Length: 90
Image (cartoon, rainbow, N blue to C red):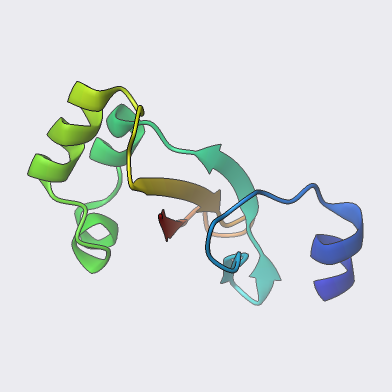
């Protein structure tokens, strides 16, 4: 799994050290940077775990991604379909 992600999978740029999400003992599929609308549709448990509040989502919509201190990268489990996120703060 490590070789698959590190050698054969395109990565993503993050200001913090990137952490590829894992579920069901396998690497998840990278969904890319999520928009405010995609974040709003995440399961409530995922949003709560990462403190992705309605207010934060509204701020992201208002800024349309410009000058944002936050990027939310999405990952989907290839086995169970669970969505995981990685937050990147500048």
